Length: 118
Picture 1: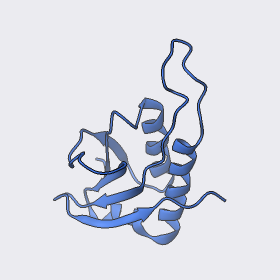
Picture 2: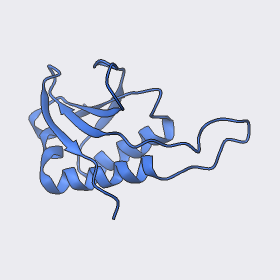
Picture 3: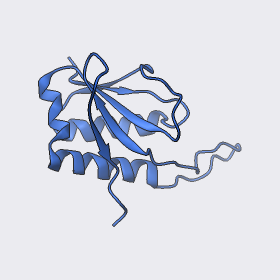
Picture 4: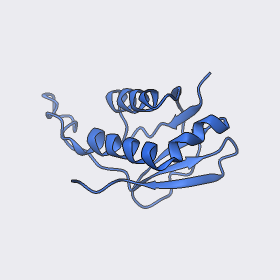
C-alpha cells in the first residue's frame, strides 16, 4: 500500500516526471503512487501536491528528507529536455512554486520550498 499519493497535474507533470518523483520518494523509504487531481487548480503558478496516507509518510517533512526531495524536484523540473521533433513542448520546463504536503483529509501539513539553485 502506498504511503504517499502524488497529485497528477497534466499541464506540468508528464510520465517521465512522475517516474522521477516516485523514485525519489522510494529512495526515502516511502511507497508512492500517482493520483488524480484532488485540490483546486485555481492558483497562481503551480504547486506539487503530495497526500500522506499515514503517519509514516510525514517523514517527507523532516528537514533532511524535505531538502533531498526538494533538490530532486528542482532537478526533474529545472533540467530542460530536448524539444520533441514533432513540435511538442518537452523542452519547456517549469519549477513548482512549492511542494504542499497534505493529510488524507486534504488538510495542509506543510509547505516545502524548492531549494534555490546552488
